[in-house]
Picture 1 (spheres, rainbow, N blue to C red):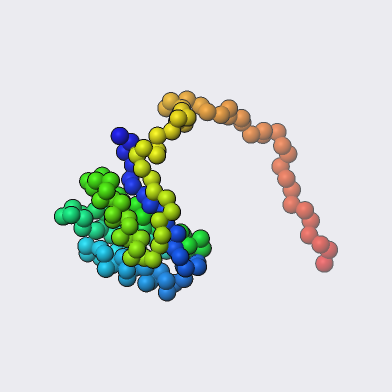
Picture 2 (spheres, helix red, strand yellow):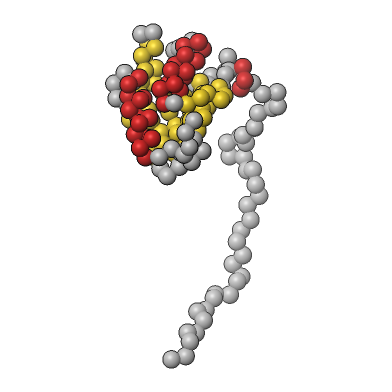
Amino acid sequence: MVCIFCIAVLMIVAGAITAAGLDRIEDQLADKAEGHVTRVSDTESVARFELTVDVSGKKAPVAVTLYKEHSRARIQVLTHELTPEEVERLQDELAEAIGAEIVDRSSPEGDVHEEPGHEHPARGERTAERVEARQDEPERQREPGPPP
């Protein structure tokens, strides 16, 4: 089985996320959280919250990333202790709490690619030719300023 964190991509029904909308979403996440919600980042374009949710007696850490301008969110369950059904139910509950609609989910089956993966070079192996900078360039002189 491929080791991934379960992710749900959501579309928030309202327009761009405002500061007031962000505070409302944080409060709604706090209602679902076991403990407190931490706003770990808040930039002009993205806000990320971390919280822990109780799922059938198991503590599940979750990251919720909001893409403000695009009215999108990502719910990422950061544990493999839950069954796929529990993860889906948790994502559904959090999406409903923040007023979002799930438009896509990741799954271990969906992450298996038919194309070969990207190969990383062996340690110490060069991936590009290094070229020394030319040293024979004359030293540049400052242009004289305008006449007084």
